[in-house]
Amino acid sequence: MPDGAIWLRAGRRALGRAQRRRAVRVVPLHPGAHDRVWAVSARYIAEADGGSRGNPGVAGYGAVVRDSESGLVLAERAEYIGTATNNVAEYRGLIAALEAARELDIDELDVRMDSKLVVEQMSGRWKIKNATLQPLALQARRLLDEFARVELHWIPRLENAAADALANEAMDNRSSVDRIPDTPPPNPPDPNVISPDPSVNSADPSVVSADPSVNSADPREVALDPREVASARPNLVTAAPGPPPKLSLVLLRHGETEQSLERRFSGRTDLPLTPKGEQQAAAAASRVADSIEAGQISAVLSSPLRRAQQTAQAVGQALGVPVKVDERLREIDFGDWEGLTFDEARRAAGDAFGTWLGSPDAAPPGGESQAQCLERVADLRNSLLREYADQRVLVVTHVTPIKSLLGEALGSAKAAGRINLDLCSLSRIDYYEGRTVVKLVNEISHLGSL
Image 1 (spheres, rainbow, N blue to C red):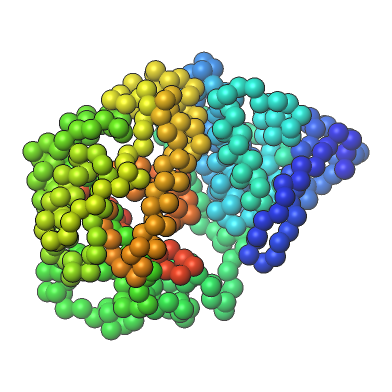
Image 2: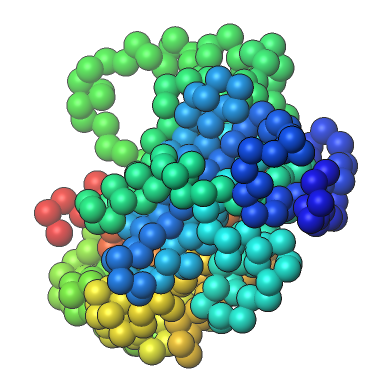
């Protein structure tokens, strides 16, 4: 190992095959052409970059994951993050690169960046004094800990052209990039091996899940009468009969309020439904009551906020089930950003807004982080698993609690962030022994033109 390189032992974790010791090797500043420069040991390379036009100013990041042997690009990520500093954007790029690599099931990775600050801070040689960067560094460290081995290299900017181009593309277009080329994953699954988690098995009809509830290749289900298809109304059943879940959780977002009309941050602000919101709640209540599972709903729970309680009461009355209020279902507290639009909050908060967007551990001033919200709704879910074992429960709540539960179920908070949740939309998560299945997301057929 070259002089000055250090190993950061990150402890142990279960990798599914065995417990391995993993480490992050941080390589010192680019050594140039020198006889002590060694060949890349990891098969996969991640390149990350971030930029800010004004520092702070218009900011974005780019990340590329590639096969080091063939040079084949496996994933490209980029995102415009509003107004932020260059350092915030660089950290966001590192986080995106690590997330992309983990989604490809990569365990050993060579990370390359042209940010000396990020490399030195992640090595532990430089302290992270900037409070804005601390939660981003913590998130990056947690991601690094998921790998068996990582090498972190500093490289000159010219050698980071691909990630730099992606960052500029995001800033130019005020958009995001999430491209995965049509190539096999780095560790393609053996088609003869069935995953212990049936929810991750492929749709190949020759591969049969151990859980019949996730198989739908039965040809008898294909030959449907077209008239039946045309007249069929969507319902909450989305799979063939199978072993029942330990808990089936139906998630209903509340109806319209004045602030949702104006797309303002509305957390602790206790607003009533608009007349249109009341119509939406009634439509959702009819949708649930008319479904074939209506009689299976054992309980209706609601956030304490008025907009949720009004929606829940409409559903409870339609089902003949009393509504229980649970504090853990309240919306996230947006602190000083309450009542502001997205753009107003971004202008008021500066760097802190970009940090909040990029880290679940960051909170608005005087508010609550996404991680704190997930903690309380996960606690509620665990309570429901105990209290309503083998039953179905409907909860009426808000965007962030629903996305928190969906993100946890999908194993990706970032993926859940891309989900659109309309007012009075229905989603559903089924919790089985040892696994979770998302059965429905943002179902709004009952709303019609509302």
